[in-house]
Length: 163
Image 1 (cartoon, rainbow, N blue to C red):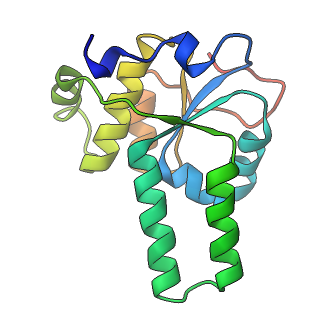
Image 2: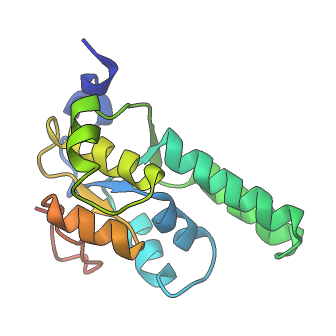
């Protein structure tokens, strides 16, 4: 079976949870560093659900943290705290490649950067196995594309369920 179709409910541990949520790097970074979206990101991170983090989102997040450290934009204690939270946070590491056909079909539809296209295509591919999958992003172009592909914007209200 191709690697783009390996994930299943069993492998992600999605049974019995309120929601399954794919995080892009913008959402992860908002949970690690204070910005306009941090409250919502932290609220989502604290909820009991399945939080998925792709290898690309992890790489993007690590690259940003490393740049912040190199450029001394944050004290070392905050950098260390961000790295610790990234390692111990709620995310389940996801090793999944998007389906090539999905990437090709989405590219002309949405004016997003390559990495964002990869995230969107990965989520669309994963949704085949997890129809209730939601996506958390704070990037405007990505949010428009995600909504256009049927990912409803998640709400941070704990009484709401993702559909």
